[in-house]
Length: 425
Image 1 (cartoon, one colour):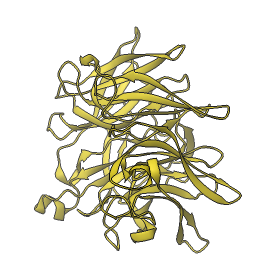
Image 2 (cartoon, helix red, strand yellow):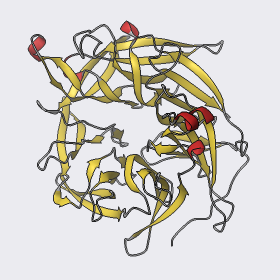
Image 3 (tube, rainbow, N blue to C red):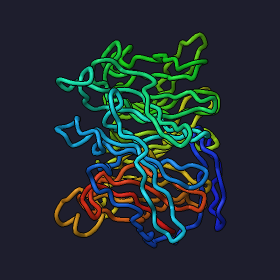
């Protein structure tokens, strides 16, 4: 197996992931919990509620995200609101202030995946809700890729690509260095198994290209497709939670062939004991190895954290880094792990955690860290950094340059409507 030697470090360092923001690494206490800080508790109404996705940061340290409901446009989801895109700004005294940048309207209602940010501060996301048809009357499907940008201090929202009159459930977006946006859908497309798409900036507007319709090879090319990541060559990588020869899920690559055509390759097919139902996006390190999690499978049936390493001749080999199975350690990993420069893996689960959750069988969840061993003969070190309550429902994470961890919860908090938090080493 082609693998690189891993070394732990006591210093903080920076690393650039493939198509991902700068991440950091710091040595944490091997068994110490992190300090949980609530940055903001959502209040509902005009303020928004139920933030989803991973936080996005600009160069000044401001945090951006979206809420799936709330805001001033109360025409959606039985008048609960159509959702917002917001900014959280740190204050000199340690507090954070929220500003609602836009209320989602029209084709862009009910953001479902958070936002990503470009170097100019423009925000991009996907919607997946209901909106009034033609400005009034009954509610209809409202699904689009949207952009939130400002001019002379005024923020506005516009759709770059509409998915038509059906729900296709778009996943979160990724962006390459040229500014192209890539995403996938869970449904729709030629075979109704979802598709991968690109939205590219053009002179005077944006162009859309459907890259691949999943289901061309039956279920063998994957179904229940998650988000994709992009490498420096423009190749896309993702996972299908179902499909493959054993119907346990796959990891795939999409390669551009030129002229707008793309080709899918199945890098790995899960069989069960090696994990099943991979969810969320993958992470890639500087050597091109891929990391992800599964909800089920593994030797204990509660899922795994896995690594896929490219081999000579084009094959890929899987290494199981951790088997979930102890409820106190968490289970039902959300996917979308993040890496630091020392090779530590951070992620969240929707199940397990505190003693209370173990006793009541509640789905609480944790933030975990999985640290590489000093030598290949030793196991990876798993640590729970924080336990959530049953109401919180944690989403994917973002690391800053100091090694702090940030995230949103889709519930819980002081008002029961979600919160933004920070975990401090």
